[in-house]
Length: 402
Figure (cartoon, rainbow, N blue to C red):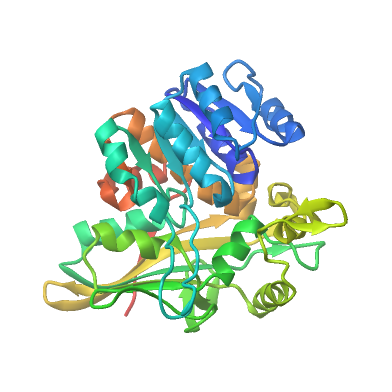
C-alpha cells in the first residue's frame, strides 16, 4: 500500500513509526507544513526512499491532489487537525483513492438553541457526499483513531458478540497521566481539545435523535481499570455519538471525558477571553486566529513523552441484556506511557490514537475490510480488528460491571 500521510505531528509520526516494519507498507509519503518537522520524522525513520518528504499546505486541496498523483497513492491518511478535513477529504475523492481520518468534519452550533438542538453536526459534510463516493466506487473511512475509532469497533463487537439487545453505549475516557515540568501542558492537540470540549456536547436517543446539552454537563464518577481508578467524567462533543447509531442498534449513546477541574477552568477562561476563536482577527498588521496563538504558546505534545508519567484508558461501556439477563461490560484499552516510549518512542496518547489507523490500513490492504461510500468503523466486522490489537502492542480488555 502507498499512503500519503498529511500531517506528521505527534499522531502522524506515531502512524509512520507503527507502520514502518509492516511488509505491506510499500511507501508512506510524509507531508506537512512544517519543513523542520518533516525532516525530523524522516530522519527518525531512516529510509528516505520509502518515506519521502514533501511540503504541503493542508488547506490547499490542489497541492494534496498533486502529491497523490505524483506518488500514485492508494490512500490519503489525514493526520491533521479537523480544520483541514474538507480539502483533504475532497482531494482524495478527486484523486480517486481511499481516504481515512481520525476525526470528522467540524460542527457548528444551532444559531438559536445551541444547548438543546444540533446545528451542523460532526461529519455532516462527509456523510452528505456519501452517495458521490459510492457512485465513484471509492471508500472513505471516517473517525478511525482511538476515540472515535477503536471505541466504535468495541460498540459493534458488543452488538455482534456480547448482547442480545443494547440499552446504552457510553464512551468513557480517563487517565492518570502527569506532565512534569509544566503548569499546563495538554498531551494532545490543544486546537482539537478546545473544539470538542467547548462545543455543545451531543447525545443520541432512539426516540429523540441527536440533541445537545451545555458543555461539561451530567458529571458522573467512573472507575477506570488497571490502577487508574475513579475519575469524574463529563459530556463532551465527540464523533462516536454521531457514528454509533448509524450501525449499532441501541437506545442511547453518550461520550464522557475525564478532564479535571483545572482543565475545565482553563477552557472556560479561554472561552471567556475569546481565545478559543478559530477565525483570524487582525493584530496590528497581522491576521491570526487566537486559538492558533494558544496552541503556539503551549509545548508540542509530540515532544512531551519523556516528561509524561501514567496511563490513559479509552473504552466503551455497554448496558443491555443477554439471554434475558441484565448485563454491563466495559471494553477498553489502557496504554502505559513508559511502555509506549520504550517500544515506539512516542507518548501514550498519540500512540494509542495512531495504532488504530494502521490496523485499519492493514485490514484494507488485505481485503478484510472493504466497501464503498463514507463509512465509520462500526460498518465493518469488528473481530479481525480486535484480533490484531495485541499484535500491534495494544491489547484490549473486557470488564464485567456488576
